[in-house]
Length: 63
Image (cartoon, rainbow, N blue to C red; front, side):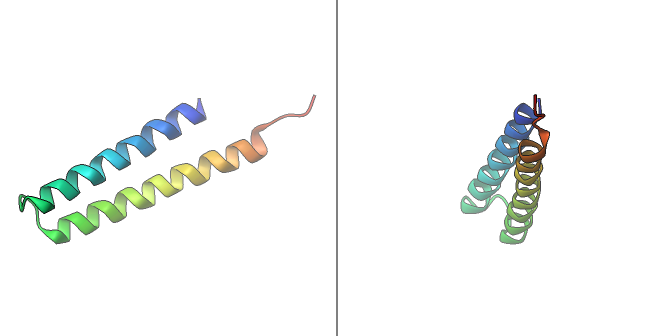
């Protein structure tokens, strides 16, 4: 379940960052909005990946 949630959050962050970049390229959004959006997505995506990695590292039980 953690893998699925991490995948979807990271995918959504990538999609939002790409969309913001395209809007900035076509001058529908300013570069300030672009950098804030990309930075926010990078922080959320990094946090999600870190959480997934920690869950994988400590989530396994020994039988």
